[in-house]
Length: 298
Length: 267
Image 1 (cartoon, each protein chain N blue to C red):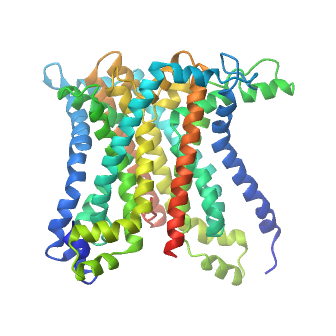
Image 2 (spheres, rainbow over the protein chains, first blue to last red; image 1 turned 180 degrees about the vertical axis):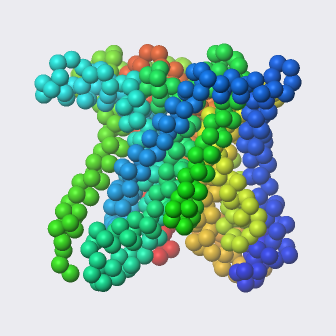
Image 3 (tube, rainbow over the protein chains, first blue to last red; image 1 turned 30 degrees about the vertical axis):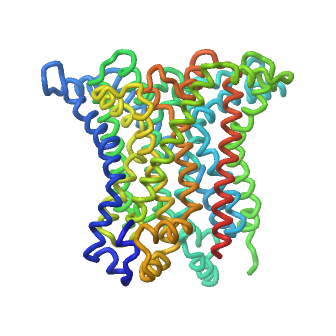
């Protein structure tokens, strides 16, 4: 299949060997072709549609998307909600990832599996679970009424709180996984050394563990933020009209009003805004700490 | 070393907190199961009575079954495609210091960092241009691209762990490149390939947004669930959700078991 895989050579020469690059390209070709036609082409098509007006090239879609009005409000709402959800994922997930990383490897396999399994269950099913929990006659309301804390059912579904709770639950395993994999690379004997030198465990944590795991937390934040930006299912099912996200707006533009140009412009704006925020955070992190946020493994 | 109060309280606090996080992640899923055997037509907690009616309704409904079979077909095809292409690519991507790997590695992670709604929109635009709207095979391709990053990371991880010493030895002993791959490399990474395929399957099987944009009348299972949840929210959704939860948990635990057994055998 590949000359590069099997050629007898020393490790370093593998990549630079004269025959390796050719065979490498052949092995990458199917993935590259699929990628080109099913990823690059569609994203390019979105960009193309976004600058198409009624008479050729035009910025009218962007004017509509960014001008004062409902679209801009929804765009900022989406950024704000995603920002909050990503922060919540880090805050809730960090101690859990810390706990996982401090377990001996034998014990943590099952715990990690329990954290990660929900990731493979459909987001629809997970959101349905929250309808059962938060609904008018759901778990929380029947419990609250049962103990006499409230007289009538509380309105929890179709609120911003419900969207937060459900979105954080959907994205939390991702955040925990990213932070956990950074934490496992931290050399624990550093902490031991700090204890021997007289530092309290808290001091050791703040001065050694926290800085070393910060890169992973920043990576986790960026990933959850970008994933949250594109959320479509959860806000539509457990949020009210105020929680309309840009993805839901794009869907409406495409399926109901059939305004593909405006939908595309909204998509491009979402993509650029998302990358801008992520880039700013990465830059800020590097400026503040002198570390690279990309150091941790995904 | 004497333990401080902080450390002692931490001993209990963290595990309790962790159990709380687990409950938060798992409880809403587990609560779906009793809802699927409740007799009431609307969602009411605690569940009332006991019935298999919603499961019967699911299996008797042509709409639900058609959607399920369509989703199974799409997921199987895209899992096969993503695993084959992804494993091939991983052979290159796992080589450290390879120029192709350095360039292609991050690029292949693209679908993970671009919001799926944009890919869905782009797919619709491309499909309508080429007359692929509603096409099963079109969706198979898109789902395969979504799964590709998972396959390449999983398989190249396994390849890096085993190294290519054995494959090189096979080559020295006269095996052709494809023989070395098929008889030496593949058996050592088989567990990773299997779990990559399982995950690729579920990525497609659960995918709603792209299907919603381009499938039209050819409803997939997630589209059917979505429609039901938006309009009537019948307990049939609870029954379907229960089936999905059980199947997913079994598949994830099985693939983990296969991988762990292989690791143990490898020492």
